[in-house]
Amino acid sequence: MKIDSGDTAWLLASSALVLFMTPGLAFFYGGMTRAKSVLNMLMMSFGAIGLVSVLWVLYGYSLSFGTDAFHGLIGNLDHIGMAKTLTGDGAISGTIPTTVFAAFQLMFAIITVALISGAIADRTKFGAWMLFAGVWATVVYFPVAHWVFFFDDTKDSAGNVIAHHGGWLGDRLGVLDFAGGTAVHVNAGAAGLALALVLGKRHGWPKERFKPHNLSLVLIGAGILWFGWFGFNAGSAVAANNLSGIAFINTQVATAAAMLGWLIVEKVRDGHATTLGAASGAVAGLVAITPACASVNPLFAIILGALVGGICAVAVGLKYKLGFDDSLDVVGVHLVGGASGAILIGFFATATVTGGANGLFFGGGLTQLGKQTLAVVVVGLYSFILSWIIGKVIDKTMGFRISAEDEVTGIDTTAHAESGYDFTSAGGSSGLIAAATAKPLASASAEKE
Image (cartoon, rainbow, N blue to C red; front, top):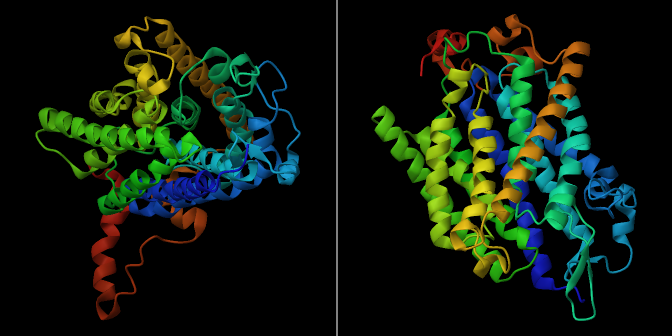
């Protein structure tokens, strides 16, 4: 088929939107940390952009989207260096050049790795993080992306699919995950949980609850994520068509409903709705609708968003009861939100959107629900086990976390020789400002929520 300039332009724009999400995530996470850790948090996201971009071209795209090499588990190495993608017309899905599709999927790989960093904020060596990021992308993300996103069908002369040769979850089993609820959010959330257990608790946690140092930055980050997520979800149609329009509207209404759902839980439970809750609820909605945005109609997108917003609002508090220090709620938002959104497809999917599968509420029985649940469990366990092993090896060799002394002093100063805020350059009153701000910054970990 001929490459379509409209589809190509939309996917190029979507690729840029998805890349923009990672700086948005950096701001979202950075505002949630203490002031003395904000630069390190930003660096972990920007480090992922640099490292994963290089690995993707070298071999990541080939392992994820190369012709299947072994029973739907991994791609071959035909696209090493991506030289093959530059030959011929390079069309994929009929209308999109391979180079454009590869660029789009690269941005998914980047943000998936960056998401993990929020679980281990305030206490992680930057070099150890970069090593983990490279190994994890190679042995966890690239294979899982192949399982979920790689489709390779044999069709008859009438265009009907007669055999599936792609990834074992999405193409062969028929799991519905339009834009990455399992491959991105369950995957990253399970890895975050594993690393939180490997690194252990922050100094003073949970007796001392760590407040976000800059809620304005959190809201800015959440706004950028919301904006970029339209490329994430609607772009996954790989065309400028009605399906991308459905994904677009479902993304908007589910996110809005999830934000409201989170705020209602906060109001009932705590007596007040917070800006942090609004930002977290929006992100939870974005996470939940990601796998389902091309499986449900807008009414059920609202229901899904409201349900998951409330569920995640409750889930983020479980870390205190269960005793694991997930610094920025990666488990409560991404693992729980991604799993919930993926599983609810089994209830809410409708053939009017999917063109095939129906969920339980639309007469489809338990078949799709079983497939969705299996995908969540398999991806979650695979990511958790390998992440724990990788983290342990790094911790036992080069060490994964900074010293307690450096943690109290502030990782920005000790690891990067920089500070996110310069309170000593405010003119003639700099001495008074420095004196007034030094104590709160030094004792930020002692503040109660």
